Image (cartoon, helix red, strand yellow):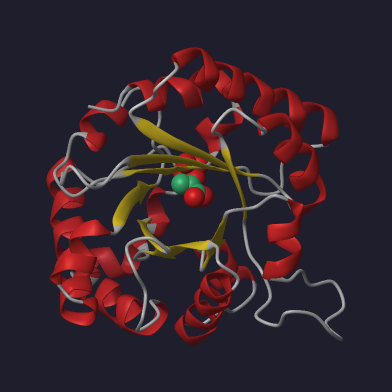
Length: 254
Ligand code: PEP
């Protein structure tokens, strides 16, 4: 891993967390981060919208960053039920996940939708965590690299920078299943993603963009995954809901 890329350990809480348990979880992680002092990694939690403000309060002063799981592309207006990037920044977010496979599947989000959201995130001065990854059928038919190539071409803004963009490779079949690709498979895809980013954005930018692995990362497999040359952190679902597990993953950083 390039010295310029700090590891990012990011938790996606999905639709989990009421005020009290969300604040308790964030406070526990924040306390560990504060006690660790000058940690060699960055940490991020992405709670549901309703508790972002409370979680941001709990994280304040600890270095724990707070993010959202989605956003609308418009700044404001007649979009009932939606949330803008400005609102999320105002609530305390510095990152927004876009294009998670659950949004692509449940809400029919296309690569074009994801790119527009990432552009809106960046325009608001926030960092986009852009999710990509193949389904099990696509992996089985040998299409993984083609799928990822298409997703990068379609989902990553043409002016993305290393500062405002993080890419998370999340094989859909590994999310929440306890299954993961082999370390060699993860490294192969991550190296390929970096080469595609280099072709699209230039080598310097590609060398600086953090590439997270996501899909059943846990305290048992994190140290091997995080040691891979082109893995610069993790996007973690289930294991981010327990402070001890989430922290154990962070402590596995090489
Ligand atoms: C995710 O949904 O982004 C994810 C990686 O979930 P899990 O860690 O539970 O597989």
